[in-house]
Length: 247
Image 1 (cartoon, helix red, strand yellow):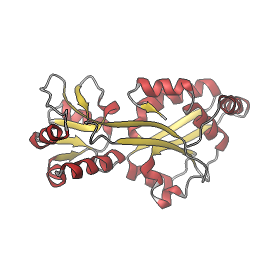
Image 2 (cartoon, one colour):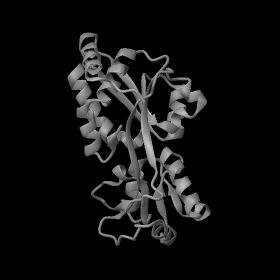
Image 3 (cartoon, one colour):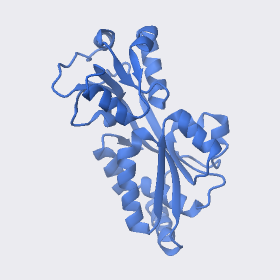
Image 4 (cartoon, one colour):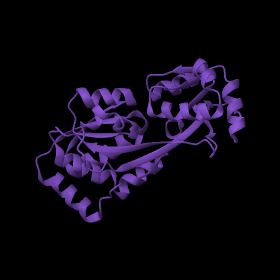
C-alpha cells in the first residue's frame, strides 16, 4: 500500500485550496463513521471543499459503487473483492486508512461474561438469548469465520438478530432486546453499553478500510486531496481517538 509523503500531502492540500471549491461525493462503511465525520469536517475547514458522505454496509456499498455517482470510497476491503464494484474505481493503489477488531458489549450495568479465551467466548455466545450484529457486512463476514472456527455457525444463525446499521445494534442491546452486541469495538464504545472486551487474540479478526477514487468521478483532484488528508498525522490522531488503528 502506498503512502503519501508530507510533500505530496502539502501539494494535494494546496491544490484543494487553489481550485474552485468542490462538493466531494463519498461512499463509506458505517463502521468508520465516527472518525470520518470528524476528519471530513477538518478537511472542509482546511481546503474549502464540501463533503457529502453516504454510509452503508458492504452489500449497500457495492450497490452504491455500481449504481450511483460518487467521487471517492472509504470502504471495507471486501467491497474491492466484488469485480463489478472494483471496476468503478481507478486501478491505482488503494491506501489502507484504518483497521479495527471485533468485540462484545452488554447493556450498561449488566453482568459481563468471560470472553478471555476462545472457549469462554464460545460459551458466552451460546449462553446469550439473542445477539445484535450485522451479518450482511464486512464485520459479518469476519464473524462468520470466527463462528466457523468455534464450530457454532448454525447456533449463531439462530441467535443473531440482524440490524440494519451500527446505531441499531446499540439500541437493541440498550433496550434489552438482545443480550450481547457483537461488532467492531469502536462502534460499541457508547455510554449505553459496557464493552466486555475484544475477541481473544486466537480468534480476533479485523475489518480493514481502504480508499479508492471513482473512475468517473467529477472531482478527482479533491478526492486525491481527501485521501492525502486521511493519511496525515492529524487524521491518524482522530482515527486512534475513535478506537481504530490508523493504516
